[in-house]
Length: 347
Image (cartoon, rainbow, N blue to C red; front, side, top):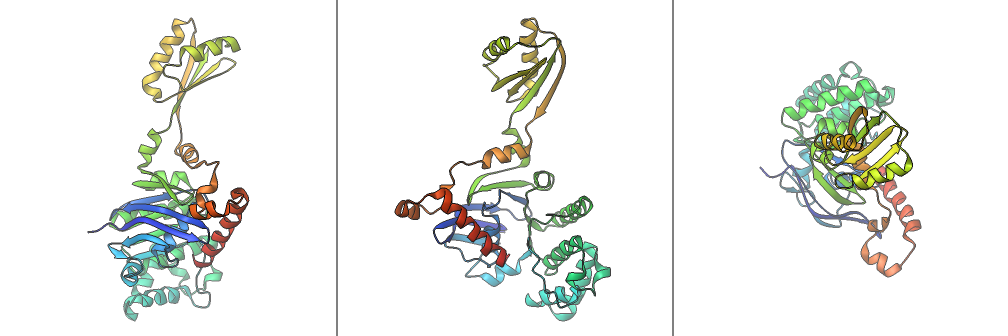
């Protein structure tokens, strides 16, 4: 089988701004794949390109081997999308909304009704099947978006910020449900701002920033790119001059050394293997150790570090930047707003 998602040098331009910059990404069939990035990174544009709500400017995009434009029907039928925005017909009972959705994909009427009942039960709002969308609570609306994505029995389920603004209990309920779906063979693409969510659910994650792929790795591999902090509490305080000497002495393996009173913090690559060496070095210098603790850089800290950028000119097409020579700090902000507006309209 071809990959569930495959893009090669995918580009999307909004005027002189590039929301996607030659993005090449592969999601294998059966994966639970996370897409992380700050606001404006291009995540929603990427999704909208896959489902046909946005036309790509250049490059290739395929879903299970089907080109998202020349083989739109086959690609779209394979996808179930639960978007960020509530874009549900408010004039029909929610069961009918699901039946209509199934009908758009060629599901016969009797089968559509059966599927609507099944997915409403699965997401836990079957007892609300005769109510309209506006009468549902916020959490029930999120469940309905998931039910609508599932009613076509998709091979690829795309979840765009599915737990944004929901309570903790619903978040865990949704985690359990999508994990079951993945275990049953459904490929899942998840975008989220919750690092804990990606770490808990995803086999691999791609970090995007300003339309580019920064990296693709497992959550564990990403955490290995961070550093550990060894906090040592000493029996006596460390003076400023002694702290400077310590920093020089530990330079062979310490990235950073800081002191505060009787506490010494040393940032290293591998705290577990480095701690014995650090203790030996401190004891050799006459320090008595009262306590020691090792903390690992969180995935969230690594994410923030990898997506921090002082130069946002990469969001603009190189041709435009060269020709216009404008102040990109001002212009890029306006362009980001324009992109966000268009995305909200089609999500």
